[in-house]
Image 1 (cartoon, rainbow, N blue to C red):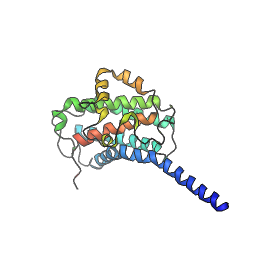
Image 2 (image 1 turned 90 degrees about the vertical axis):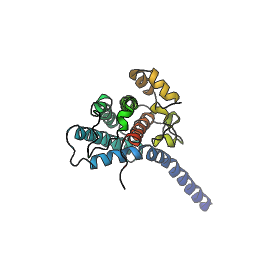
Image 3 (image 1 turned 45 degrees about the vertical axis):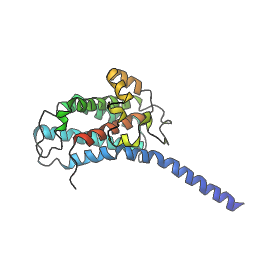
Image 4 (image 1 turned 135 degrees about the vertical axis):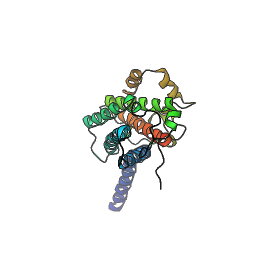
Amino acid sequence: MKQTQTTSSQANVVRSTNTRSKPSIILSAVVLTSIAGFSFAAFAHGGATGVVKERMDLMSNIGKAQKSLAAMFSGKEKYNVQAVRDAATIIENHAGDKINNLFPKGTVEHPSEALPSIWQNWSEFKNMSDQLAVYAAALKANAGNSRAGAQGQKKPAMGMGAGAMMGQKKTGMMGGSGSSMGAANTAMSAKQQVEMLAKMPPMASFQKVAQTCSACHTKFRKKKSK
C-alpha cells in the first residue's frame, strides 16, 4: 500500500513539474530573439557616437526592462505588479516617436546594426515602434489583472504561433498582409487598442511586446556575424 502511495505521489510531482514548465517554454520562444538582439546592441556600443549611440542606448534600456519582465513572467523572479508597471513604462517611454526620431535616413555607419531596409520600409518600421508603445502601455494597464489565463497555456495568447513569435513573416500582430489583428490595428486608435488589451491577462501584452521587438530585429537589424 505504501509503495502504491509513493508511486502516486511521484506521478503527481512529475505532472506538477511538467505543468509549471510550460510557461517557461512559451516565454523562451517569445523573448529569445528579442533579448539576444538587445544584448548584442549593448555589446556593440564601442565607438558609437551621435544618433547611433543614442539609439543604441535606448535599445539597451528597453532590453533591460524586457529582461526584468521575462524573469517575472517565467517565474524566475516573484511577480510584482509595480515592478511590471515600472518596466512597461520604461518601454512605453522609449518606443513610438522616441525610436522613430533616432533613425534619420541613411544612418548606418559602424557600429550601427541598422539595415537600409528600415528606410525602404519606413511605414512598417514606424508601425512596429508605434505598436510597441501600445503594447507596453497595455501591459502597464493590465499588470494587476488575473494571470490565471496565461499560466500553463499551450499556445500564446491571441492565437500567436511559435513561428510568429520568432519574427517570421506571418506575424499576426505586426500588421502583415492577411492579418486580422493587423487590420484591426490600422482601424483602431492607440487609445482604443490599449483599452481593449487592458482587459486581458498581462502575459498577453508581454508576449506582444516581446514579439514586436523580435520581429523588428529579424527584419531590420544586421545579423550577428559568426
